[in-house]
Length: 140
Image (cartoon, rainbow, N blue to C red):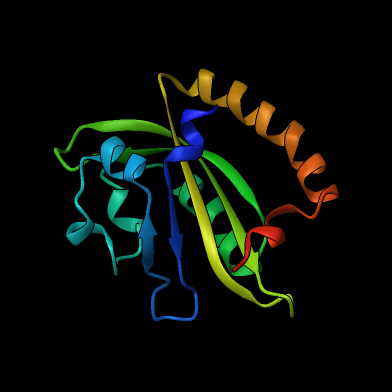
């Protein structure tokens, strides 16, 4: 779980198509993409021919409603190789409770079963994070 915290992107929903405005060095290492290939693009570029539309829909609905979500999604690296991504997305809000960014955390897992176990752990921690102020406290 520690390494997952190093693989993340920030997107800006105030810009057209909610583009990535920051990606961590770990994200570039995980995916093999460069900043020039990532910044300014929507995260959809990680999807490919075998990406499950149901996983995409979970993410889309969370972003549309400003909710947190986690799902296992098949994504693709820059070299075209697929990887199981246990993905978590959360809205980051300012002091007026307006969404200013979304954070997307990527964690490569070996199988969907491993992703399910990780999802259970994330879901058990979320109530504690929300109790302590949650992602809102991360907002700039």
